[in-house]
Length: 248
Length: 269
Image 1 (tube, each protein chain N blue to C red):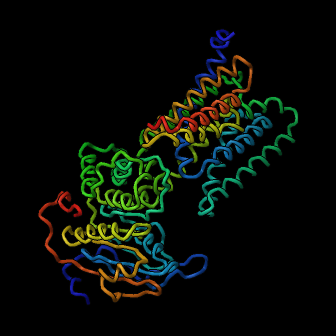
Image 2 (cartoon, one colour):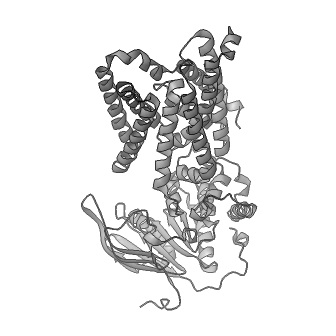
Image 3 (cartoon, rainbow over the protein chains, first blue to last red):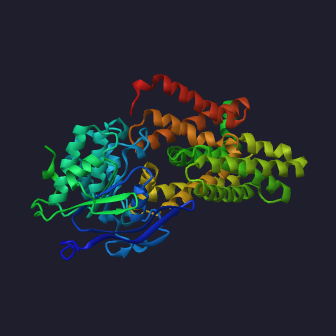
């Protein structure tokens, strides 16, 4: 039994989850729980099913068997999607897409609750704040494809942060980014984890980086998937507006 | 002669219909192009032609029959797209050849209506009647209404579908809506622009706007302006020199595309 089980709620629970594709098991019998204020690293080689598991967690795919729960609710019935922020792989979007950084960041607010509604002035202020936090407010009117890899990653993180999510999911956030930028990016993630009551799941193939931060031993293995975990009990920041946690 | 044409009722109907299609086609087209579905317009146009041919054959109003076929075609494309997720273009190829095959079957069954069908292939400014215009108007209202309500959701869906799904948006429903709207626009547009060229109106204005627009909103505005320029100019040219309007509109669009490419560096908006 882990010592934090009693003091924090379950954010994600995977029970006997299996996924088959083209009559081949991608994985079977995955059991794992993510608790409030965990930072979970999900490591595996190519083809281990990392992205598949991520998609199962957010209901993009349906497990062949087993159950996925988000915040205690079966994922099929889950409705509070604004509690979740998602940072996709940097190379998953079209670099020639005609959208400004601001348009991309605002799209973080386009969820089921905001359907049939326009963004308010307040919403737009929140987006501007998120840009300031990531130190890219001067790039707001630039086309997203013109930004460097690191800047794009910050734009996507800003987008995921606009709803102040309780759970942040990152899919390979370091792909195609130089080492220095990666370090800056992780400093920010570490701060958010330590002081902002957020829970993280990060998919990565970068074992070295995960080891240096989440420890050298996985807390659990399921087939080729390895789960690493770091839990935070640090005091929350007094300031809630995010702008203080700017990278140095 | 120009005045005669401009003041004639048939031309004014064609112009009004063209202006309406000029708004809706690129407005939908931008979402199709950005989702790598540029060819869906062509596909549904070919399917529509099969419907038009059947309409002539069995005595149903051709545009209605075409509309029904285009809708069935759009459902079929969506269905196949799901079956072959990573080959979106495969569904398009299958349905397109299916449409052409059906169209040629119906043509051979009803050899005597070939002359009438020509207008549906290349467009005409003479044949748009009040019923056609009413259909175009209805489709325009539906498309503009949809875009006004769901613009931001459609943006996110085109930019990155996974995030749209994680945000809880009904992704499947929006995908289906986009193809159905495309079917509507195409079946409404083919009498003016012609089935063989209607997809140009969905894609070329967008191709031009992608060269110069930095933001999504500007991309839409630029593509609509460009398409209106080409539609109005093309229809007038077709009227004055008695040419097929599909040809004049599309050639004008391509000319604008070439000019834009040549002077591109100077006109970023």
